[in-house]
Length: 230
Length: 47
Image (cartoon, rainbow over all chains, first blue to last red; front, side, top):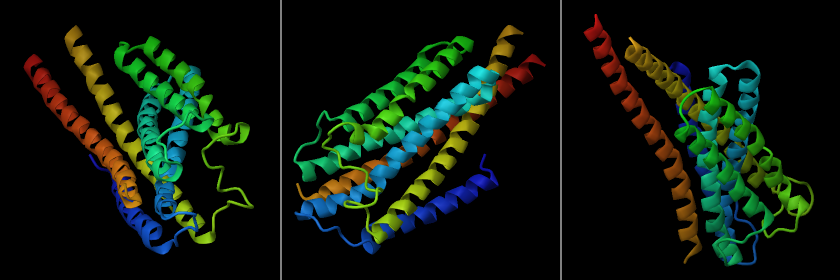
């Protein structure tokens, strides 16, 4: 069931991830930090932040497709939304796991209830609820409408997560993309942007594959229903 | 724990997540293939 585009994307991903690992672990010099643990743990940043970006992108697509579904009542929007929500939940889960792994050697604690961490956890819970809603409600327009509403309302938390480090005093590091003190050095910036681009391609690949499966699954379920009626 | 252990743990979790999702999709595809065969049998039986 592999199309040429999927094969190309898979090859691009394999090469890009190999380059990513080279850039992160060999090419980029270690940061100047007060202790060795912080220097080493900083390398987690190159996959932690792109995972968060991918989660936000996935939830943005859920938002767009939810609006699209309520407007056009097109089943395709609903299925793209579900596929994207699954990917979003996966990557926010990875963010919530890798964050504490970075925090322990740097802060000395696994978790703190600051605004960035708490709002990220809430974001994860919202979209887990979205997936649970889809799993436990029977297929139909009620399920599609409800999940679209959750998909739209849930997205409100994404800008809150993003701006939480500006709006409130948090233990979480400030935005490193900003200019001035604390901004990334050029090799780090290149490695980070490359990783970000790779994760974006990964999202496109996973979304395509998951959507294709959902479309086939949907069509089979429809045919089973027709057979039962006959 | 050594900082390298944390680094290894973080990257392992991310790779596990990515490959785990691909495995989940593969399992779904196999399930769909079985459903397609069953559907084909049902259609043939109706004829």
